[in-house]
Length: 310
Image 1: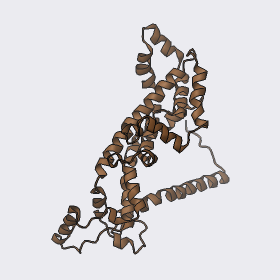
Image 2 (image 1 turned 90 degrees about the horizontal axis):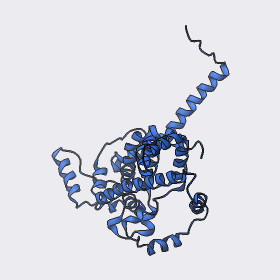
Image 3 (image 1 turned 180 degrees about the vertical axis):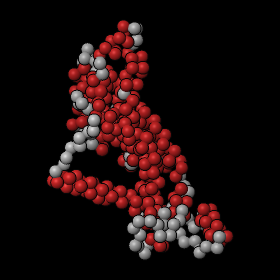
Image 4 (image 1 turned 45 degrees about the vertical axis):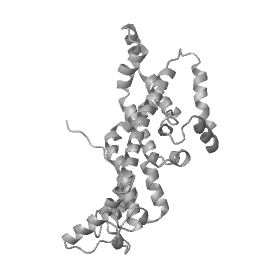
């Protein structure tokens, strides 16, 4: 039998068309700023000063990224940021998962008191000075652990994960206990496999937080060896001088100049502050754009499924 299509009135069709056009315009308005940053980052600096670049690079070049990627200390800061994002995110999700599993047990002694105690920091937060004093007493100033330990627990994340555990049938855990499984085995072999979507979603949120955080460096770090990628690039942008990155006597400048002479191209012109700033933005945000598609499918399922009872 043929399916009968639902007939839409003229008003409904007009409304659908308007929605489609509006969403396309809104999407383009959101995407274009990122596209503009990208095309300026790949354009010659002196040429970019002339303006009139809207949709693609007018004079394509990779020299801007060559200077940025050869900035002293960049790769050390990048590796430090990767290690921080990986270790800090895993620890945060693991701590929140264990807390959520414990609080999901209604027979836990002092459960309401623990929940109230964990809820207090959401309403009564310390000042910048008080947090600095605590970090100093804990010996976390100029310590890599300052990137990981203070953010190892998130009450919001724990509540969402606990709600997901509450939605699971009690018979799963009861049958495992009858078979002789303890809480550790139940947590590792039953709870965690069933929460893959939620774990992946909150893991990505935590990675983004660690990747983009600059405040920790500003408040607690003075050692250059502990500068993260974002803090290093933020200092360059705040300096407002392309000369911070561009060294015309560096090997990379000599290499570019020699390559242009061999190919018979025009004389090398150093990048400007504008294109260097755009190239820095691309370098800082590119890793997140790469890993985002791998986590996207977990977002709605992972967050909403755990927020049903939250």
